[in-house]
View (cartoon, rainbow, N blue to C red):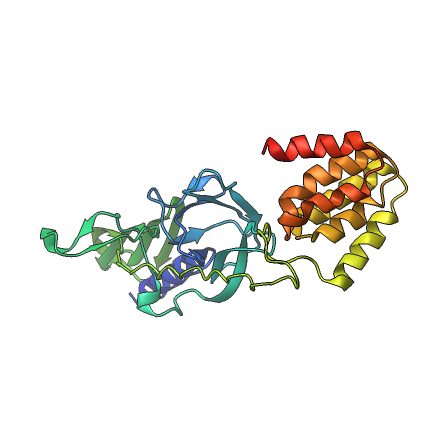
Length: 331
């Protein structure tokens, strides 16, 4: 029987080794956005949540897809490299361009996290004790597993062959193992057979509050008062002298009229001009049509809009002045 115990211990160690050939992935959203996590085409949470835990990942290079509830946001797709036996935590956040990305936050050995750090799926309409007095909106997912072990022991005694035969069938998350070992010693005449089957299915559900949604802080633009001007204001603050000088040099460095126009409008889309600065850019164009085109564009990007009549000084023809006047009146 000592040999049988040794064999069973070895089998259990082998099972533990198989369990180590997986990794866990935790994904949470920085600002509380709800999402669905898909790993290698497998949807990990049926209900969108702000934190999703996926266990038993058997691919070291899984494809992670995060699909936000907001359908206007394109899904985040990212390939990862996950070492077996570890838990990886990733944060769903935005980069400087405002695009959603996944960023690694840390890793730990499997089983080293505190109990309250492991979360599973809880429906969004969960009500404690069925009384309707307390609700939470967790939507985390963790996969459970089942283990089936069948052990057959055959023992012969009383003078015949005294032996031990062990058959083990083990199933772990869809992976089956069959082992047969025979141990024979001594003589005996009688025999007995004992077969024991144990099936254990585990499902763990832990309710964890969602992280609080951080308020968005919107900074008010600084109040600017143009010296000598008290009329209506378009945009908040015109470009500084140094910044505008660099913009002029960049536009003037383009060899074609069309390229100058493209760059001038790019700069205007992200900045505010003064009327004098609009006139300065108009002077960089060689053709009257280009000057008129930019003057119409800049009308929505100027601070001292009450002075806009002054851009007429940059035109060479009266017809351009009339065309701009009609454009402004039609607004």
